[in-house]
Image (cartoon, rainbow, N blue to C red):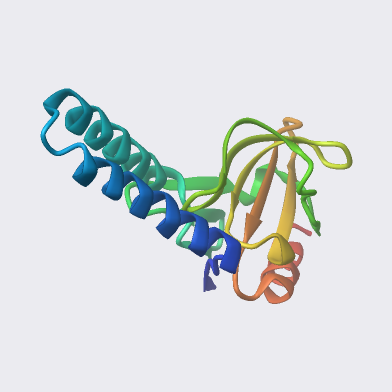
Amino acid sequence: MISKVKFSKFSIILTWGVIGLLCVGIICSWGIPKKVITGSVILAAMIVSGMFYAPRSIELTEDCLIIRSMLKKKCIPLSEIALAERCYPSGGGIRICASGGFMGYWGYFNDIVIGTYFGYFGDRDQCILLRLTNKRQYVISCENPDEMLMEIDRRIN
């Protein structure tokens, strides 16, 4: 089963706004090489890190849950998933080292209800919490979270 990750309107607007502002900054400082290089490096670093971590799709195979981004894939063995349930990460959670909307929500977060987790999600309304046997937690999202959750539950039980 494969399901694409849908990004929230906020995430889409924030991503294009940040990219646009950085491009405007680079263009406005065109005659100053140091500022152009600095702005270009910042823009490239943000886009590459987003391409590395921002989720594009969630795939469930017979033995693994795969989180795919543009530059990597993360495989979580189904044998390590202790519990899967729907969740709603709070907007007031602390980003330990994470993106709060730029190219989705990804990275380490700390939430009052959920605790510390690594997020790979695009829309808070479509999230699934995965609790692993080693006490790690992941929050993922996809276009069909209820179907994905039912399928994960079926395969881990």
